Image (cartoon, rainbow over all chains, first blue to last red; front, side):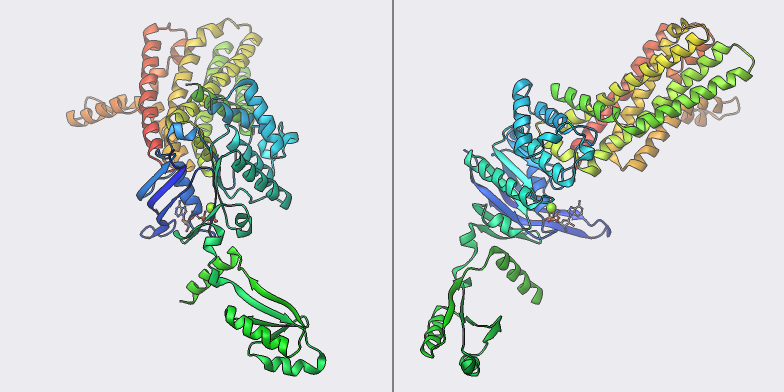
Amino acid sequence: MSKPIELKNVSKTFRHPMKVWDKVEAVKDLSFSMENGEIVGFVGHNGAGKTTAIKMIMGFIWPNSGEIKVNGKDPGDQEVKKTIGFLPERPYFYAQLTGMELLNYFGRLCGIKGSLLKDRSEKLLRRVGIFDDRNRKLSGYSKGMLQRIGLAQALIHDPQLVIMDEPMSGLDPIGRREVKEIIRSLKKEGKSVIFSSHILSDIENLSDRVLIIENGVKKHFGTVSEIIPPDRIRYKIEFDSPNEMKDAAFALFKGIRVVSERFIIDCDDLDDFNTKLSAIVEKGYPVLNAGGVLPSLEEIVFTTENTEVKQ
Amino acid sequence: MSRMINVAYYTFLEMVRNKVLYVLFFFALFIFGIGIAITQMSIGDVVDIISDTGLATIEMFSTVLAIFLGISLVQKELSLKTLHPLLSKPLSRTEYVLGKFFGMIFLIIVEIIFMSLIFLVLLYFYGAPGRLITYIPAIYTIFLQTSTIIAVAVLCSTLTEPTVGAMLTISFYITGATSYNLVYAITHRTSENVAKVINTLRFILPDFSHFNIKDNLVYGKGLEGLQIGFASFYALFIIVIVISLSIIFFNAKEIN
Ligand SMILES: Nc1ncnc2c1ncn2[C@@H]1O[C@H](COP(=O)(O)OP(=O)(O)OP(=O)(O)O)[C@@H](O)[C@H]1O
Ligand SMILES: [Mg+2]
């Protein structure tokens, strides 16, 4: 069975919108491949190149170099498109059609008709929570409702691979949770899902693997635990101090800080942590909290960025 | 095939619900009204003048519709990104272009039938409803001419942005409507080479005089079936070339 998505050294440059002589390198030498049945989170800041990569996967635009295969075939292939569901970034649909008409239209393009189409449409409209608005024109839909009908049209033909560009943008917290639920249930049905976002916490607890892209270049691709290296675990001790011992407490180590009456000291590594912890206990300070904390994906990405800014 | 018909049907539905259509329609009615007002003041056969105004209004309204809706057709979809979800479905770009074109043609057919009915009511009011039958060939050639404009509008909208596209389409219309006058550019004083250039131009440029059997009919000069046949062939020729080009361009276009 061929992989749902496979990119080999894909690059894409655009002409600069203002300066004709200039070029924008939106995606640079991007390679990755997705496995069947997995959820891949595609992360990057604004302008990182996520949408550009997705458009190439969909066959809307073509790479300047490199190779893309979707289910082992070229992007945009008629047969391939039958098995792909796509939710564009900030979806917009025919303003004069109703939600139900849109699903009928798109369903028929996928070769679904009659009662099957009706059943599926109604089920999906309920699933994305806009069943009551199904006979309203799309021109009257809010941003979040458009996002929801967008999701429904992407799933109308029960696709095996679902590609979503920022599926959670424009949704309220309940909506975000519902979309996450839909993504999880797709995985349970054995579908493969790739979705982009710049909100890492959305991706962290949903994706099997995370693809991080920065200025068009792949930074990481792997499971969350692979991406967060063990040496990035930060050890920290929090302790209390009786009033008369406070001055002595400050003198204990360099770099002690006080946050809301608690003394906090950061440690370099596990050894440092153990030494400091025993010293604190020995002197008789009550320890409030001690241990290692994994940085979130958010911190990882932000730190890499910060170091780049400094250079 | 069924996918193309789907695109055509929903294109029609989307356009027929567009408010701009009704603004244009009331404008057309207004022109009809002015025509009637003029007949009250003029000498000559009232029914002839009504017919003139009626056919002219149908032609004008169809042309305006073809240019403006035709141009906004693909362009609007590109700028609003309605194309992305559509083309993510198992629909080829070729089917899309054809579907859009036929959706527009469908709209124009409905519009022309509707306008003809109003025309019929007017003729009835002036006691000559039977005249409409004699005007059917003229109305048919208006349809042919409009179809070529739609094809050009589709081509322009796949090539460039809406304002430029509208301008190019209007240029096509103006060229088509006036190129016949090149005939008068050749006089006995024209040099042979200039005459050759002019004749070549006449051959290349679109020439709507092939669709103009209206004048013959209104003043009852009799009609040649040959002329209708040629007009049909001429329109089809333009449409096939222009739509083929649209398909080629659209297939090579990055849908950003
Ligand atoms: N058609 C285009 N012409 C010129 N530059 C473009 C074009 N499309 C994208 N770009 C540029 O390519 C880069 C990547 O854009 P892209 O839309 O892929 O980013 P993104 O990761 O999707 O961002 P966001 O999170 O804001 O959606 C940006 O610098 C953008 O300005
Ligand atoms: Mg984007």
